[in-house]
Image (tube, rainbow, N blue to C red; front, side):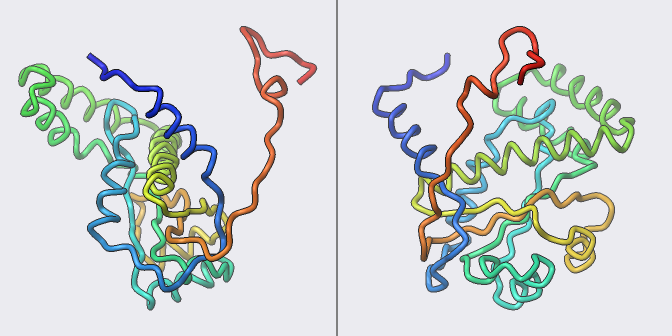
Amino acid sequence: MTPAVTAEQVQSFIDVVQSRRSVRKYDSDTKISRDELKEILTLASKAPSSSNMQHWRYLVIDSPERKQELLPIANSQQQVVEASAVIAILGDLEGWRNADQIYRQAAEAGYMAPDLAKQFAERSTQMYSSLPKDRAREIAVIDASLAAMQLMLVARAKGYDTVPMGGFDREKFKAAFELGDRYVPVMLIPIGKAAQEGHPTTRLPIEDVTFWNEVSPSH
């Protein structure tokens, strides 16, 4: 049974969503420990994924030397060196290689019978390993993006700030960090404490971006 959610929990979550900003100026004296980063990433990984294949991977860049190396790749955007760390969100094109472990863990946790887990692992391996490359990439990017959004909300809940960055040279990034062909760089997320608050932004009225049952040409 899904646990009940209290009114206070609902309001707390809404406050987190409302207070998240894209922050580009960070307090360079703030350090986030690797243990806390691991906790944030663990919660981020509660995001949903295709067949629970968890196609996200995280490359945490927290050494000053590697952040400086990243700076020109990220178009000299200073947040990559000022933030406590930069988390590169990657999509794993071969996430199916973990199918046995994923479903074995599910069986060990009592979430499914061992024989059923074995069937799911075999089916997932066969299906995902035979996908066309474009489709495999699409799934990996979607899964990684779900984890990225969850990461930013978890960070905000813990009092940290983030900004999703798509403005970087992906080919240079892949070469510098030796990603090979298996991992797709999806976005960079600097994380730390704001030295300057992110400015509030507006959104289109929900009526302008929502369709009911059919797409209206007037939109």
